[in-house]
Length: 112
Length: 114
Image (cartoon, rainbow over all chains, first blue to last red):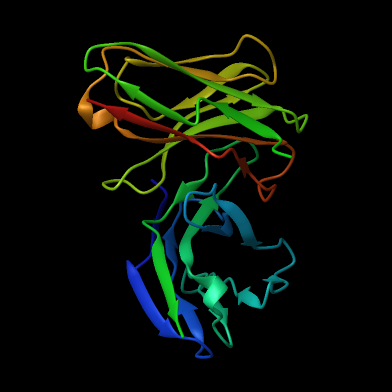
């Protein structure tokens, strides 16, 4: 079956340092990949999604590159901000209307 | 202005009782979902509905029953509640026309079973 692996459960960074959150996946099909962000006591919200034409998605300074050869969709940002502190989920979906399969999540804490 | 309304926001229930979690979406979407989030399983898919029909069910227990009375409603009835059912339950929706369509989440119902 489909699965998503996020190897880091907790990441703590100092403000201004680069962010990289890992995401690898296994899927029978060629899925679309997503990053969702969840701030404390809020709903998960879409941060980024992969495109059919392999363009690199970017939003709020974050970007991710889908590498089909390594089945990865790592999330990156050049400089962490305090407001980036949140729970980040990588997810995949292979069909319209199909469920989103989420990874275990990575809690990012950015300190001054 | 929330487009996916979940009620109640917080719910405390006694073991063995029955509760209904309400979800309404005003995004005009044709697919709706339930997810559960707890300390043990961060975001776990439960059900998906498309045009008010059950499409996928990943919940082993029949104590969890989704109910769709209208096309923009997907309630979740939980019977014989157990302490392990304590979690935040998120309702979500999407427009079922592409695999990379965004799935929108409600703010959740936090259920505590005592």
